[in-house]
Image (tube, rainbow, N blue to C red):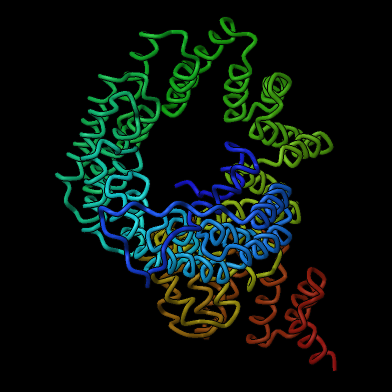
Length: 609
């Protein structure tokens, strides 16, 4: 909806005439208390605007055009001393207050204007906008309802009224408002979409589909209504109906790219990748010049595991389109997925030379050089991503994961923070930031991000397991145990979850039989995992079965002997067996590996003294 501020009118009329109109528009409006003249009577002649008021309005207008809103306000207020009946002047004053962010003062002035002329459109529209800005939707609704009575067929007013009914939860009135717009032939895509979704929320699926079908009929070459109908099938969990709808849509509109991608993802997710490939092969056969479609076909071959066919297709594209960066990008990605790092660098460097503005290229180049131990080149490639300063959170996620793999924790944290700022409600931005902070032993800082990740996806066992371990270390055992138990319900055969929960119970010396069963199940899957072997040893230690504990902890150290924690456990077992000299040797080894282990130093000092 337009906002009729004074400077917009001036662009049409000229300064003097605009000021004249502003004052003239309401200077002769009768007071509400004055009797109205009979219908047949001749209306009084308009009064001439006060010349001093006109001069001040012109001055205020010039100040407003230059952005000097305080000076404009003073000029308008002085003009009001010479003409106190101009509602247009009240609106100008209110607009100046609005520009100065004095919303309450603007509202007060507009209400004064409406006391003079209750039906003044400019004053009503400006007041409604201010109420919306203040989020006083009930007050805004009252104003729009007045405007709708004055202009019952104005589509802008009816549209805003319907949106406000939706904002305040008055679904039936919202529906009526949208239907009114449709009947006036004023339905926009937003109206069709909103009405369809209202019916969808009310689970009136037939009405939702019929509404969107009407949208299709009114705009058959717009992909949006077809996507919205697909959403209804998704909500109904009617996968068969959704696939059939997408197929029929593509039959009539083969150029609808989003629908094709949706159908492809759906088929791949159902394990029907051959059907997806056939669909793209037919599309490519019909238009062999569509590089995007051909590239997607190649990627489908890759998903199927048919690397040879994908490479053949991409190499054919290279012969046909030697000057298109996307061809080199596809070949580079294929080499990247095959871990052929030199080939990856060769193809992606060519793509980057042709199009240096694709962050994913620089990230994969950085990974390739890092894998080749060319750390300086890797850093240079990744630095280009920072220079592009993209607002795509997926890019910063990729960059953060790359730095995480490279163990560059500061850079990983910076990239993860960027991703999170851009998409704070995304699961992976929270998960990655939590992971990076936890890796830096900043577990308490990591907790809110893992908690948010689980609010977004309550079934992710990785986030659940990490958060459970953090809470265990922080001594919040009830929360830790509940997370482990929930995670094991979702992934009962996950050996890491089994081991970590077992160790957490063993450290506390509780539920030891359950802990032993958990670690035994983990060892069935990974019998040579040194961490799992140590856990079993520690569970047996807590159960008082020291000879057996010694056997399992020694097995752990035979596989990996660089863990201070396991050496400390070995010393503790020897102590219980009365072999103090062996215990001292084990503790000394633990202290050499980690001189921050105060408990180990205390044990050493105890026996030395």
